[in-house]
Amino acid sequence: MARAGRPRLNISDEERKERNKASARKSNQKHKLRHVTIDKDLLERFTHLKDISSKKLQVELTNRQFFKLLLINMENV
Image (cartoon, rainbow, N blue to C red; front, side, top):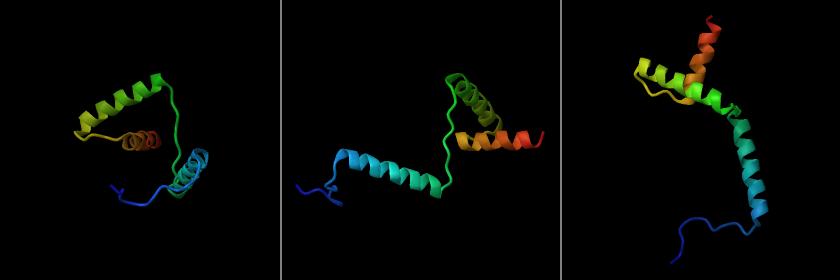
């Protein structure tokens, strides 16, 4: 049975990985995305406070939304 869609490119796995990395870099630059790395303890605190804020606001906050709220609150202090 024939597969639907575009056939796979005839390139090596290494070339495929490089193309995927380049695509991700281009997408991140286009959308101005940056990744933030935090350790486990900070992540647990962040998640706990996000859950508390979500319950208080009665809305499930995403990490991005909660991070924005933190920044807004810090600017208003």
